[in-house]
Length: 424
Image (tube, rainbow, N blue to C red):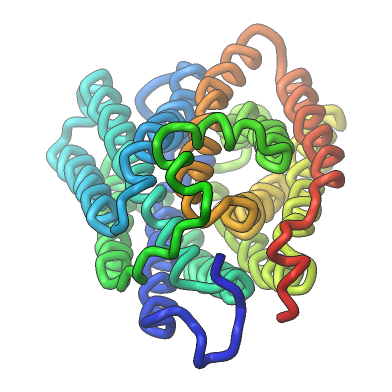
């Protein structure tokens, strides 16, 4: 694997690629803030339907489309010397946001069934193509940016997108308050589409380093035994157990905004405040967690971030049990917790995955790991079903129990061999 070394032994085109990855990563984060999966999109769907399972379907479609195909993509590209053609192919799916924008501007939202159908089909298509891009993206990132500088890159990108996201959150609230439906969301989708253009330019500018030399087991792994070898890796299994449990945060996350409006009676303009809280927390966490990653490695990022992830459902439960009015002004804490939790996927889980994976099997590890995570695609819909059959008390309590268990399990993660040996 690539190691942090002096400037003379950095990978080819290191400085160019650092900037290209940074532009891609930060621009994507800003664009994504305009169509936030836990606040903006659930509020959009609630304008078209009162169905809780349909609101939960947002995360189900996104996670399923992004995660499930990645094992097949990994099998396809694992032995390919160049991964960038697959990265570029996946970028084409971003045109979906322009199609949704056009549909809203032209009045399709007057027909709620048609608009919901187009939205979910488009969301799924975009998720699938972005999943294809991500398998290649992570492999190129691991070869182009050494480990600790990778933490710097991800932390800086999250900070920049978070800083811009403060303005985005305020703008989201302003747009939702001053423009009638559907033109408010049409404008938000337009701004997201522009941000995705900047991200695409950055991704297309990446200069892929040459493939790394294969180890002595490469032939056996490339010819089909890599799946057995990967599943037998205890570090991989432990990491995936942690990811799955922390991922259960998706049971409740789509319903925080609905609880705020339906139970706490907070005005719609507070959605912008939720975005700001989530963004500011993520921005601060990105700097702190990147420093933790450089000093102690990504496994410590996972531990710290998982502890904060458990705060969200726990505080939502406390608000509900207290009757709402007393703690309602502090409800943005729930979204701050989500902001911290979102930081650990890249800085923690994915970074650790790249470091425990053998060089020639990196796409297989990423693809297999993300496909396993696809088992959680029904989690948001299950959360909607649980809410309809029980109560917010049960929903928040069950979610908190899963995430807390995941945090405990993260405490047993072992440091990667690479970080143990790396003197830098």
